[in-house]
Length: 164
Image (tube, rainbow, N blue to C red):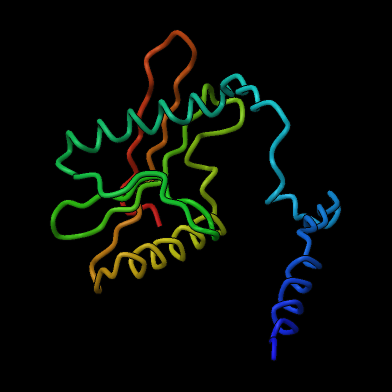
């Protein structure tokens, strides 16, 4: 007695299998984050003169405060709530410094830009920063560095300690 029937079935089942490529997804069904980019890389924007002035003011503030004996801990720290300009220490307290730089006094003194609402936001951000870095209770001082830096002139620096 021959037993060729099972082999025949096996051969038939392997012959009936064909490899069908999976359907290619339409562009609409693929999320944008997973699509290959066909665009050219973005052209860098020219520097914004206001941002450049602010960066230069922060650089000047860091140099000034370092000469006063403070040590920079963090700069331009950001979270979803906002940004802290400078976070420093003198070894016994944390000093949070808001830097305001203006090219002139046409819009008032730079320190006038830090109103009660801005001060509350800086306090809230400071507590978030402290908890993010797991810093236990410590003394905190809030300063303002007001810098007026007219074009082609020397900057005028006003350091307001314990501003709020």
